[in-house]
Image (cartoon, rainbow, N blue to C red; front, side):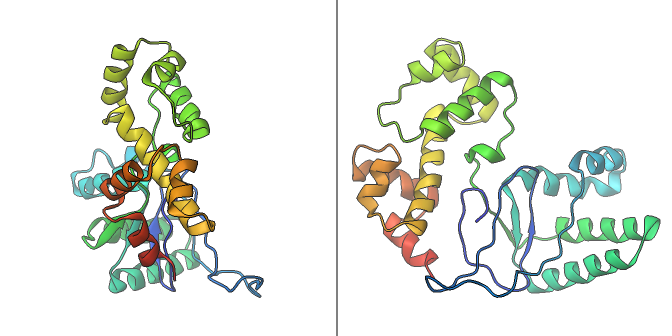
Length: 240
């Protein structure tokens, strides 16, 4: 589970996460069974700002900026050869120190930046993957995260949270978040719906009402618009 996305994983997976993007790996075991061992992984943490500031004046590293700018949503690299090369570079980093370790790190970033076979993981509307831009917008995100299931939520009440009138809030939100408030709210709701579909035994109708939709037709329409598949199709494709 990464942000609002849930998908099966296998040995050799290679992913890049931006800061504060929640993620968890759970073995797919029958009910009642528990793993006897943990999941082994190579994990590399590095400060994004340090990398950007260190390389921003070097034209040869321009290719990295696009990679790092997409990291808040998380990237999943799909090419098997890339996965293997990245694994070798990370193992070499473990055996080196100082300057040599940094060289392998830069080679790793270059490898990832050159890839075309990847997918973005979390949706753009996922609240924890967005940069708020201001304290005012952060309050709105927190409110939506807490009350996304409120079916009768109105623009007026959310505008009050931001201490603005409705028209001003709509303009402000779209300028900062690059989408309308309604689009953002639907993305958050559908993200939570995906989790409920996979983690509970609720029916599609029950999930719809649990996520703030008054009827299943609107829920199905919004789900297909955002996930490019119907709720039932999503379940068929994700449950393994």
